[in-house]
View 1 (cartoon, rainbow, N blue to C red):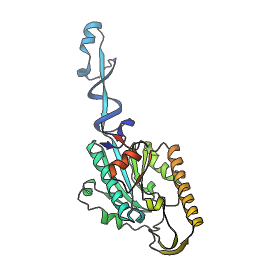
View 2 (cartoon, rainbow, N blue to C red; view 1 turned 60 degrees about the vertical axis):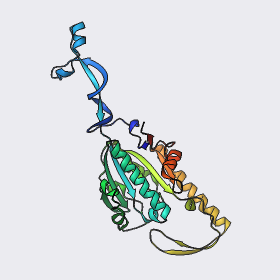
View 3 (cartoon, one colour; view 1 turned 135 degrees about the vertical axis):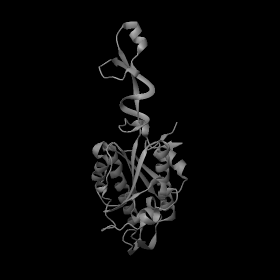
View 4 (cartoon, helix red, strand yellow; view 1 turned 90 degrees about the horizontal axis):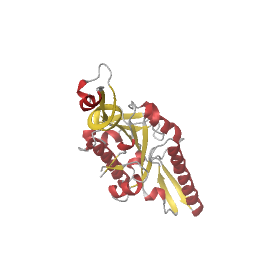
Length: 275
């Protein structure tokens, strides 16, 4: 029912079903032009020649296979709760399967700080990828992903699946995703507990990345500061995504996946209907 927004792009690359940037040999007629020596005579418009005595060429819409580079943020916070781990896996499976169904060329990378690994798209269906992803060891577990180190392909959809819970300026991340005519798209899973917590009293907080524990007493003013900081953080990402023309969809973990995508990813133009 849904897939990445392939129709919104003009593609370059191998033959496929989506509109390319040039002319080709598909069945969809596009235009005429004058004949030039060396042109394929199979595309001469003989009916027009019979009427005018002038050779002209039929032009057809070039059809191109899309290119998708999926990037999974493999930091520990993406798997911290059962709900978030489930949503992370669902998003990765949805993005992979819907892209393959559309005939796209798909590569998948998991990255945690300066550590990275390539994932075989077919291994997702066998659920063999989680152990390798969770074993990635970054030199600084809380550092943002070093996306500029990935061998991303030119003119690809660069899809980042990340909760974005790392301290950094969003612009370098989005610039790395947009290099070499790439198109960034962000899918950000989040839980209700992190977005709107109901904390009150004494808590042992666990740093998901460093596995350290911190005891705090949460008063109303402390909770207010947390909510303000959380809102400011994602407003920065939203503003940066607008500047870089990157669809940005925050996806809650509690609803079922497809209703969540219709409610949050479709309005953000991070996905499109298949028909």
